[in-house]
Length: 110
Image (cartoon, rainbow, N blue to C red):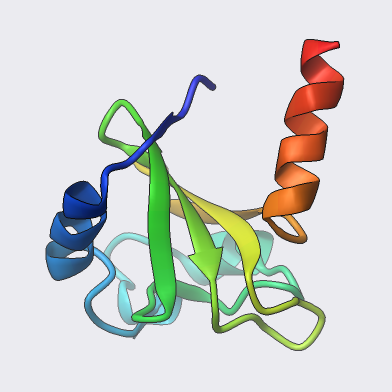
């Protein structure tokens, strides 16, 4: 997806209403069955839908956000990159960090 880097103002605005609280996926039983939550489990990413220590930095169509994860799960690494995908409302692991993400982009371009 062609993500666009966000301005500092956009990052601040998104943080104010989007990742401004901690909320586990299991708190949204009207949206996620236990099977769906199980399918999203990743030992690198905590099972949250919202987390105060996730910081968006790039977006695609106002509905997908690349985020720095400063609160990783056991097998994760602080500063890893995750993606929030709206309209399936899921969080997926993307890369170990910004350097790996850029390397992947450069490989794809070449």
